[in-house]
Amino acid sequence: MHRFIILTILLSLALADGGSIGVNYGRIANNLPSAVKVVQLLKSQGLTRVKVYDTDPAVLRALSGSGIKVTVDLPNQQLFAAAKAPSFASSWVERNVAAYYPHTQIESIAVGNEVFVDPHNTTKFLVPAMKNIQKALTKHNLDKDIKVSSPIALSALANSYPSSAGSFRPELVEPVFKPMLDFLRETGSYLMVNVYPFFAYESNADVISLDYALFRDNPGVVDPGNGLRYYNLFDAQIDAVFSALSALKYDDVKIVVTETGWPSKGDSNEVGASVENAAAYNGNLVRKILTAAGTPLRPKADLTVYLFALFNENQKPGPTSERNFGLFYPDERRVYNVPLTVEELKDYHDRPSAPVNGGGQKKETPAPVVSGGVSKSTTGNTWCVANPDADKVKLQAALDFACGEGGSDCGPIQRGATCYDPNTLVAHASFAFNSYYQKQSRKGGSCYFGGTSYVVTQEPSEYSINPFYFYFALNMF
Image 1 (tube, rainbow, N blue to C red):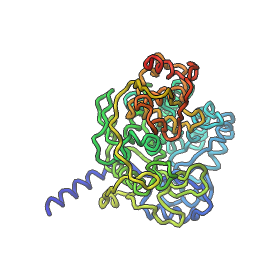
Image 2: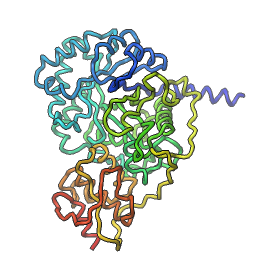
Image 3: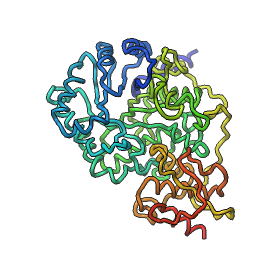
Image 4: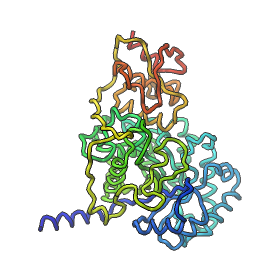
């Protein structure tokens, strides 16, 4: 009895000073409850932060007086106008922020979303738009209360494995990242980051442990650069961003995770998408964040994390998983049980059964990862290359883990090395994919990488397109 009381006290103390959990409220659906009902749902679940993807008046009015802190979004389509016309930025702030604050507790503005992967080439307008929005906030005396930032995807990193080698894409450093980080530092804001371990796992389930992706017990992975041991993929990805910030001397800039989640359903080839895995990922993530656990590199970092998403959204395009990231069905029933507050966390236990993939089949334990090198297989000559039309976020995730847990020898594609040029995502991914494929003796399934690659039977001899060929030729013949 005394032991139980002591453990309860210790848990309460641990939960006292943790991070914060919010949720993304997306509305690409035709069957969602009214904004008023959504706010009632948020309050009933103890959620105190919400992020929306626009400034819909009905939503902002419904949130008025709720005590829920709100992040609003200026869409990518309006970056050009906000960058080029300070009057537009001022009018936007006046109509969409000042008109509702402080009754609606808007605490931050996300200027664009994952702008670097936006096909409409809006990157050059990002920082000017952020600065004009900030000036508009100052005009209304809101600059001390409301922060301005912009969510980035992990594809903004040139390297994310090992975490200690995290770096931003070099072509973005001078024109975008340095001025943006200067802005965040000067205004006391933070870098918004969208992190999805699911996509990395889905693309590399043969080399990434499911337990590692879901915050469950596992041996961990040692970062060869700093000797730190990582026990989950989320921490590894976040620390790659921290390392990228440190490399540019912005150690003082904090991070807010504006999106992360796991789908409860997927197509047959979307490995890992299941109700059980979604419940485990989100539940264990909430436990980590609310128990004041930072990352191996930043153990004292109290992260604010926004789960993606509040609802399943039936009109989102893409694979089945895109419509099944929600914590709730549109009728407000939970898709699965997951703790969202400190109180719920006290009774939370993750009880794993046999791991399953998207098709409901038991997932075999991945083979041990072997480091580097290209095998000199005597089977027919084939090569594994990246699909240039693949989704860039998935392609980056596949590249990261080919060079990481996959054991590809990616030294020659590091900056200044033999095969660094051409410095493109497709070229570097082709190098890494082929290294893994040859190391696996070209066996079936070793050139899948979540559908971002394919096998070719003719030598990819155009060095300017496929730098991996040069390295392969040296090792194969």
